Image (tube, rainbow, N blue to C red; front, side, top):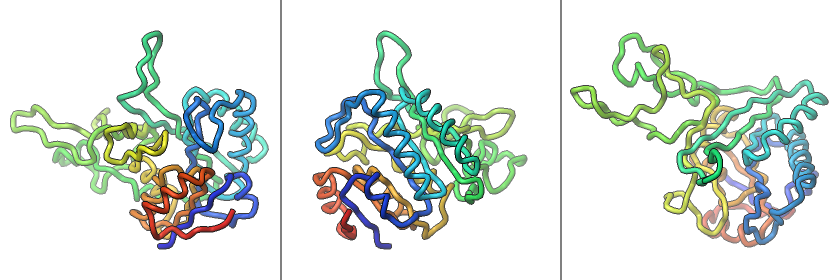
Length: 277
C-alpha cells in the first residue's frame, strides 16, 4: 500500500488536502524541546490558540480525530473542546489516557505518569471494537465461566504488561496478568498503559525528541478504522503512524514541518511517495 509524505505546516496543507478516514495527532507539547523547524516555547495564549486551530482543522478533514497531548494542558484543552463541541453537536469526545511507569521524577510533588489521549468522533462514525478485543483474566487462566472471544478493553491504554501473560507456576505463584481483575472480569479500563519510548527502547529513533509507542497507535487505529482506510498524521515525526499503518493494512499520509525529519523518513521508508505542500 502506497504511503505519502508531505513537507509543510499541517494547517496550511490541510486547506487543500482531500478528506481522510482518521487523524492521529501527537503535536508538540510546548515544553521547550529542541526542534529545528518549530518553536516549542510559545506563550500559553499562543499555544492554546494552536490547540484550538489544530483541532478544528482536523475535525474538518476526518470523522475521527485522536489527540495525544501533554497532561499540563488537560484543563485548557478541556475548555477548548467544550467550546468546539457546543458549536458542533454532531461530534462527541472520549477521554482516554496513556499511563507509564517511568515518568519524569519530581522531588517536590507527584510525578507525571500519564498522557491524555482524547478521541473526537462524529456520532455517526463507525467503531470496530471486535478488532481490539483481548482475552479476559478468566479466559487466560482456564476458567470455564469465561466468555469466549475476549473482551473489549477500556479507555485506559494500559499496556506496560506483555501482550501475552507469563503463565503461573503449578503452585499458583508467579505469572504476569495483562489486565486487572475486578469481580471476575477483565478491567483494563480507559488507560492505555504503554511504556514511554525511552532511549533504550527498540522503537526509539534518537534523531527526534519525542515518540509514541507503536502498540498504542495500533489500538487506536484498529478501533476507529477498517482495513484499507486512509489515516493522516499531521505531525509525522519518526513515522510511528506510518509503521503501524503498514503493519495493519491502512493507507497513511504524513505531514511533517521539518525538512530534516522528512529526509530521515525517506531514508527509513523508501516506498514513501513525495507530495508537494
